[in-house]
Amino acid sequence: MRESDFVSGFARGLRVIEAFGETRPRLTIAETAKLTDLDRATVRRCLLTLADLGYADYDGKFFALTPKVLRLGHAYLSATPLPLVIQPYLDQLSEKAGQSASASVLDGTEVVYIARASQKRVMSINLSPGSRLPAYCASMGRVLLAALPEAEARNILDRSDLKANTPLTKTDPEVLMEEFRRVCAAGYAVIDQELELGLCSIAVPVENDRGRVVAAINIGAPAAHVPAAEMAGRYLPLLMETRKALRLVLQ
Amino acid sequence: MRESDFVSGFARGLRVIEAFGETRPRLTIAETAKLTDLDRATVRRCLLTLADLGYADYDGKFFALTPKVLRLGHAYLSATPLPLVIQPYLDQLSEKAGQSASASVLDGTEVVYIARASQKRVMSINLSPGSRLPAYCASMGRVLLAALPEAEARNILDRSDLKANTPLTKTDPEVLMEEFRRVCAAGYAVIDQELELGLCSIAVPVENDRGRVVAAINIGAPAAHVPAAEMAGRYLPLLMETRKALRLVLQ
DNA sequence: TGACATTTGTTCGTATATCGCACATCATCG
DNA sequence: CGATGATGTGCGATATACGAACAAATGTCA
Image 1 (cartoon, each protein chain N blue to C red):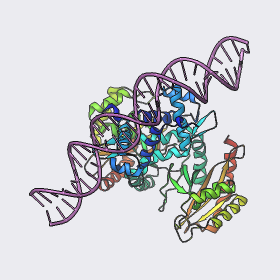
Image 2: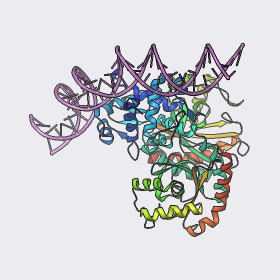
Image 3: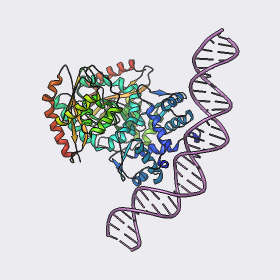
Image 4: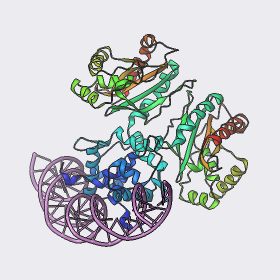
């Protein structure tokens, strides 16, 4: 691609949108400039453009995104058949298992939830389509990374912030790579409270009819209710069944 | 705002993103140009920029959005405390009612779902945060429109495509305006299969501690299970209770 | 099949719009 | 009041959009 085939004004604007998020509901021009590392004048023009298009509100001091920006993300969710196709299977899976079931894809070092069927319980995880988790310590992340060529998986690990969310979190790249090989061979991954204490999950990859891994599905359960050792015995058959059904419908 | 405070390259790029969606997973340059009414060369630059930034994939012929664009919409969901605060209340509400509960805000002529707690049932509605419904025929839309000054509500109706989704859908602007006045006085709205046959719902507005309407919450139920006439009797107390609790925590 | 018409993708020159800097202005606070 | 930090603005250098022309692919019809 030639350099002139790049619209830097557009790229700068997208960076401005991403500056919002994670407890940053309202930003001033100067704050946004610092976060994006762009010139204040540039940021100002982008923010005023967003406001003019209705993607942001402006009270003269603070800018805040409006629900209209959801259209941008929604363009992906509604344009991609994947979430729509997977949802009913997920609903069924969740009902049969009596636990929450989710589907996700890989984006860089993170898994992104594209669909979810949650069970109403006392301990409920606050996840919904669009939510992100670090791939290295999530069950779906493990199967998605395990499906990649080793070099790619290692590259993603290198770029990941491998921190111990709990005392059980595996953070050593070598240990993780070994785990990926095990997951690849077994066809599923179990996480025992590596993301959050008290939470276990089990995931399997989902392939399309050509055998390419296009997503992962998982079942999450409270460790107090289902010990990690029992996850596979209880839920693997259900997951495998769903995986097989999806393989037939995903082109 | 001066004309020079508008970054048209950015605005054009956002239009390109929105061109995807609704059964348009993959677009060529020429298709996108037609949809956005932009020059092919301009569209090409925008799409290549998206691909370069990882927001889109390009196979030499078709462009497709990647999960990364969800970050843009997610910037709103995670930056706005509203969805996060409302979710646990919604979970509780859904559990007590034994039906799906949702929260939404108004965006133009549509309501946008910002949180949802769904019950696993045979007949389950496929809605999630980011989903959109026309406001005029949705229960949450009715209470949100009813909370606006009459002139504004009428303006939105004028801009709406008032079509009869079912034989029960109200499409006459005068009838709807009258309905808004009734909803405003009663403090809740009931929809009897106006959006889809077999689906009833009831909604109430949610105010912050200063009394401003910031969202709406609703409960949806199969008409076969709960006739519209029984919705208020069964669910209004629960909704009012949730509304009252939210009013205390929303600043 | 082959010739023609149509559509699509790409390149290029130039008029125009945007960027980033420097400076002006304004508000806040010790 | 001066210092600090924020927003608004004018201007030259630079980057981008537009339109047209070209190249390549695709479709059409005899």
